[in-house]
Every structure is written in structure tokens, then in C-alpha cells.
Figure 1 (cartoon, rainbow, N blue to C red):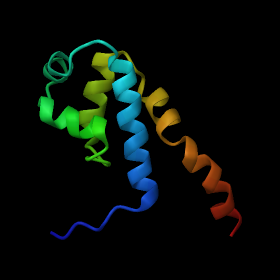
Figure 2 (figure 1 turned 120 degrees about the horizontal axis):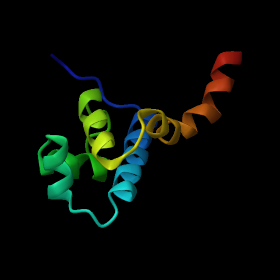
Figure 3 (figure 1 turned 60 degrees about the horizontal axis):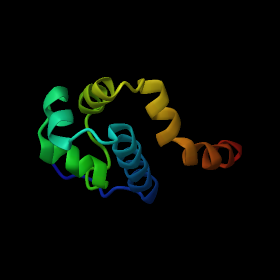
Length: 92
């Protein structure tokens, strides 16, 4: 299966997701957070650094749960720049 390259918007969204999770994690260790969420520390590191721009929903749900974030809050922050672009697309 060939994976299509990510769009610049998807890459930016992944970077915003990584920053959000890193901020929410605060002083908590990456290892502790990852293990509590049931993901590998390497997976969490890649998501936080933006290297995995489109992680699986279940992965984000598990991490968000451990960090006390609602999925609504995660989506609201991660998609914020999309809202600026979306109205222009709708009127086209």
C-alpha cells in the first residue's frame, strides 16, 4: 500500500498536536505517560515532535485520557488554523 505524502496542513496539524500534548504532559515523564496510555515511549516522542503527523485515533484518545484532555479540546486546538482556511474553501 502506497501512502500519499502529507499536505502542509496535515503536517502543521501534527505539529500543533505534538505541542499540545507536550504542554499537557508538563513535568510528567514521557515514559510514565506513554506506559499509562499503553503506547511506546518512542511513539509518544514521535507524536510530540511532529514526526507522526497523523497518529491513530485510539492512540490519541489513550494519551489524551491519561493527560486529562477531552478529545473535543484536543480537536479544537489542533484544528484551529483549519477554521481560518475552511470558510474560503466553502465559498469556492
